[in-house]
Image: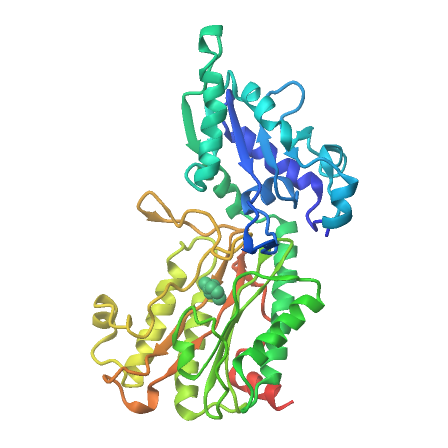
Length: 439
Ligand code: GLY
Ligand code: MN
Ligand code: MN
């Protein structure tokens, strides 16, 4: 499917990266490897996020090379050649011609020629940027290309001396989303919001967690989002306290909550939504009390997402509300400041309030610059996802609270004034959830 991001934007990203690279350097970025599911069946292919960001080229067996100042073109792609016989079985290939015509690369060659051509492109460049240490076999290939140059030093060849992790330059660019990227992420968020609504409406006792997962997948696919951004979490009852629960096979019981953490991917961009709702359509008194605390914490955290605040402000805001709520409900004792200082909330809230979101669900970008939390700036996109999880075996608290797991998660983008919520159309107040489920 063609990318919603215009080709010019990919060229701009490559240009920006090259502006940050040393002038006598080269960057080498491989496509994702294909992976075998079983025997001759492959897992569905998902492009490498860095490669996708710089090329928009969705095929495997490709390598992007950026060579600032190269006379015959700075952006070079090695990719599979067109082959009518192969394409009859496995589908369309762009070929080097298509890479230039349709993807706007400056120059392109067959991937089968890379060992002959690339050492000559690296020769004379003193620094090589590549995803150092990400994939052993690619590390070895880079060194093989360098060895070819080293073997020719007596003939005057200049091998590179510095190898630098590409992510230092590239991931900072990826952190700031463009208007087009936000459009795509908003689309992913809207589809995921529809999916959560559909799953909420389907919930009833006698069903199974996977029935709700089926509704999610149906909605994603129905809107052209062929993949989830991560395995969907559908945890009912105490399964909602298992943070990465993906078994999704337990029966739904009257009186239990269901926690669904699921999001689709559009154009390789992730969405990431969590909602928690009662199987019966009506919250119990204890569920209501805890839910209101989590919802207030989420509002407080979203309020703290604005320029001028740093990365940790939303987390601190959520922690205050969650901890005060636990004290008010008698799940913790003592003063708020002491409880925060001693991290007394940890048995009930053990994860962070969010993460960067983008091409990867836990997206790239530094959270700290040196020792200081990063300032929030327009275009940064993140999740806000406080929760409370009362373990079923927590004998420190009254029985009535045990086995309740609640998380509420939205995707937000920092704007000039504050932030915009990309996943707003799925209800999250108790009244709105109960109304939707009664519908
Ligand atoms: N679904 C993964 C997360 O919320 O971080
Ligand atoms: Mn998340
Ligand atoms: Mn999530």
